[in-house]
Image (cartoon, rainbow, N blue to C red; front, side, top):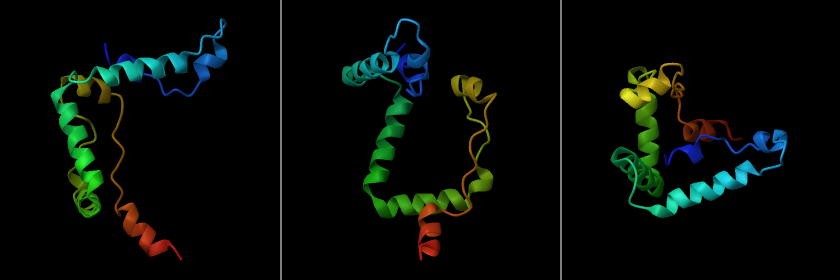
Length: 112
């Protein structure tokens, strides 16, 4: 399963307690690289989300508009992810609330 190398935060706690000193974070980084270089494989929805995010991050004005839209519609955002796979994951986890004010607006207002 290509998602397994991403199941760790790479914080290094597993390496610290490993009785035989296996550098698990290094192994996981290697496995992540292998997954990334295989290319062409992966879920279509994930690829679409990454593509949309890439475009949005490349266009600052669109990103600012999206941030404001997310804040303005925050009451409509779900608390849990829909779908069979995501539903299982989010059954025990709530999504974070969207801030009432985008960070950029807060920064402009508060930076003195």
